[in-house]
Structure formats: C-alpha cells, structure tokens
Image 1 (cartoon, helix red, strand yellow):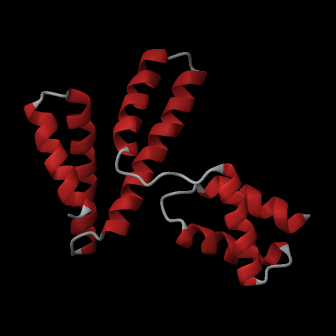
Image 2 (image 1 turned 180 degrees about the horizontal axis):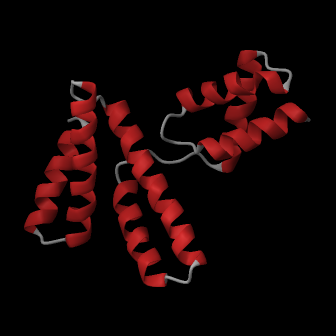
Image 3 (image 1 turned 135 degrees about the horizontal axis):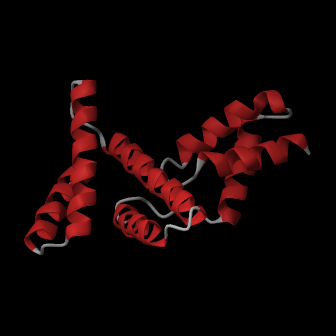
Length: 148
C-alpha cells in the first residue's frame, strides 16, 4: 500500500473516531498532496509524499520553536500534537552517531577534500537518507568535517 493510500485510510479511521487533531493534520497533508499532484500533473510517488511530509514536519518544528520563544505554550503544544501525527509516517531519523558515520562515508565516497566539495557531500547524504536527516544538521557536520 502506498503512503497516500495509508494516509487516506487513517484519515477515514480518525474521522469516524472523531479524532480532531489527526483529522486536521491529515486533511492538510491530503490538500498539500493534491496541490502537488495538480502542479506535477501526475500522481505523487512515495518519495515525493515523504518530502511533502518532511516539509510539513519541519514547519511544525519551526512553529514550536517560535511559539515557545514567544511564551505561547498552548500553541506550541498544539503544534507538538500535530508533529506527532506527522512523525508516524516519516522514517526513523538517524542518530547523531549514524549521521556522523554517513557524513564520513559520503566524504570518502565523493573524495571530498575541501569546502568546494561541500555541496556534493551534502547531496550524497541527503539522497541516501531521504527523509531521515535534517539538511541543517548535515550541512553543519559536513562543514566541520571539511574545514578540519
């Protein structure tokens, strides 16, 4: 079963159970997927759906940070609940140790030796661990590794 079908099935289950948070989050995901489908003119692949989910999750994480800084605890809690729903569909993120190892492997694989090679190393890690790593973290580790 592809990811969008699973989301649709879970949406219907949550709707019947009157789970408002899950219904709202999955409705937003379905709408974003539909918009992307129209934009591309074809159905989304699972990779494209994962990208869409990762983008939604990242937006929630940024909102949580902003609401927390502003002292808006109730809004931050709402975003955390929504993020929890989205994380059900995302693959398990890499641990910091595994991410470090992935960066080392990518540096060896690409033969990177200077900061000029940073883009190649980042794109290698991002492609290999799609949806499991944050670009900001990868960038920081690659920069630290290549500038050493």
